[in-house]
Image 1 (cartoon, rainbow, N blue to C red):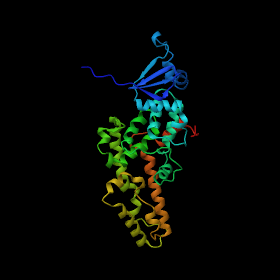
Image 2 (cartoon, rainbow, N blue to C red):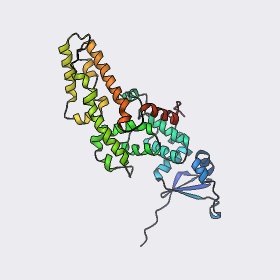
Image 3 (tube, one colour):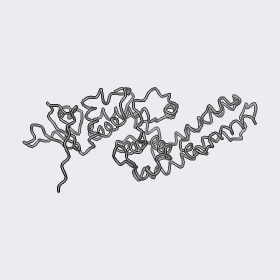
Image 4 (cartoon, helix red, strand yellow):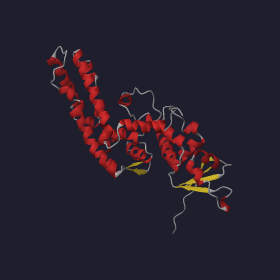
Length: 328
């Protein structure tokens, strides 16, 4: 007995009675305007330039292999951009951004690809100051909310590779390491996000393993070293007391959750622990400078430990893809 054919569903807000092209993705159909698609998409322009067979002259059907969920979001962004995919800094949603990024890249809709990259930039920093603002919630605004399903980080790693958004990868690797306790084996064996299996390539798995251990160990080996240093600090007015304050601050990180804390080394140490401690001004200045310097040194080498180009090169890629004007 043959299986029943899936019921075709017309997406009502993307079914225009006077449209002259039907697109089908999965079991969903869209009746749209070929002229608009051809004007905005270099790939559709080439695809639709081929002569159509006589029986489809009135309203030809084009089948896409992409997810119908992504195609729906993509077409809404093209035919109703103000409500579904407005320019930064207007709010939108994560899945719409990702659909527009992937399909905008695939079908040559350059303005949608760029717009999606700009939206993602609000949560994927390429400088330490941006990363600090993100952590302390002092960044001006976000245009999208993080999904509850933590596997979105694995999904993004694959997406960024697919669309050549390499400048996002250092922080994405950092997020995978920071959340290793939650993600665990999913980083290596894959996970489910939006009903699809997502995973890292073998090359990215190897890069993660190499960089993760350096990231985890950097808290103890580099970022917190100033807390137990016995070097004499010039201008210190109470050496014994200030050293004890530094050691007490180190103890605050030595909790049963040390492994999770060490996974996210950039913000494991809270500077408020020593700002209100009675430490002398000279030692306080030294500690803050040492902490900032160690964090900056780690940030500077973050791309390298995950096998990526240096920040200078990544920033150029970002500028070439996005430019300086964000609200377009």
